[in-house]
Amino acid sequence: MFSILPRETGFFNFFDDASNILVRCAEAYADLVKDYSRRDEYIAKIRQYEHECDFIVHKTLEKLDTTFITPFDREDIQSLMKAMDDVIDEIDAASKRLTLYQIREPSVWLIKQTDILVRSTQLVANAVKRLRNLRKPNGLHDDLVEIHRLENVGDENNHSAVADLYANTTDAILAMKWKEIYDLTERAIDCCEDIANTIEAIVLKNT
Figure 1 (tube, one colour):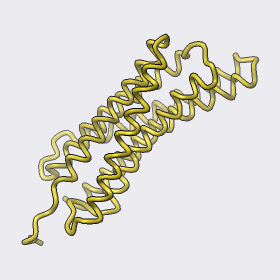
Figure 2: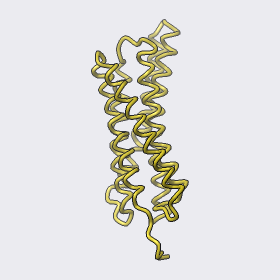
Figure 3: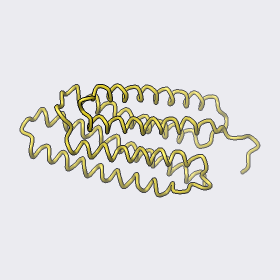
Figure 4: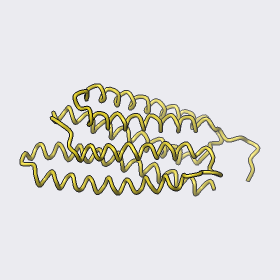
């Protein structure tokens, strides 16, 4: 039904801002494991991105409290922002553990996973931008399908990384440290799929 009251469109700016921070955070994590001598610099960047995303989430929730008609269901807006925040929280936790656990150098598996994560966040940002015009969401379906595919790849990589870890690491404590880092990174990829699921729900309700 056509409404005489316009929907508040300012939320889209928050969505775009959060998704852009998401990409930069994932890129910083990938840069960290490929340029490990500068890890403290990249970890500081990731921490800053975590603060910036928290601020955007807070502003979004404030806007929800004062907006009568929203572009999508309120719970979907909350879910979308929470999932993006969760990705950054997982990246922040994983990156900190590299120094906390005194990891000497990143593994090949971690490098592979950060590449998957970067690509997933880029697709998330593309998909989020397409929410502005659900009547012509050109490429949105393809982006969401690819996010799901990358989650499967990330899951398989994680299983292989842990199997390799247990087969070739004699230091049990070190194995536990690495497994936690792998799991946190894989959860960040999982959260990208959570975003895709939320966007799919939004599309179904609004088209």
